[in-house]
Length: 144
Image (cartoon, rainbow, N blue to C red):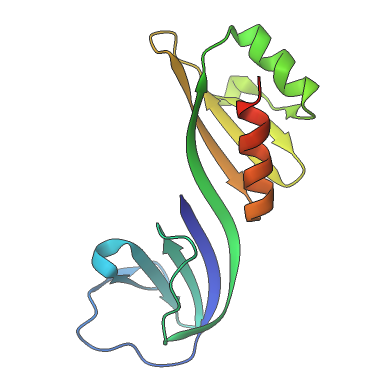
């Protein structure tokens, strides 16, 4: 799982924290790269973490989770059956012609399913605004 949060900078970072310059700011690396923080000149911070919940770093405050990104797998079915099952479970289908994935939406959650015929499972990426939405989506996708 990856977590994207928005925070504000409340303290200067130590000089020994590794960083690189990015557009409009600096990207700092914490915990051997498990946490990255882009600090903009405005004091706004985008925090990217492979840890959930993201760690509390003393340099940032008022962090709000913007997005959870979860990788999963589901059993292979025919594409037509997959689309039918998703629609039955309340998903709205997106335009598949623009990407190499089946796009499905439910509330504020987006699901990308990458159908590969040479595998027993489909790779799935879930983009959710909350842990509850993510759990509900995983439950719906894995229910038979």
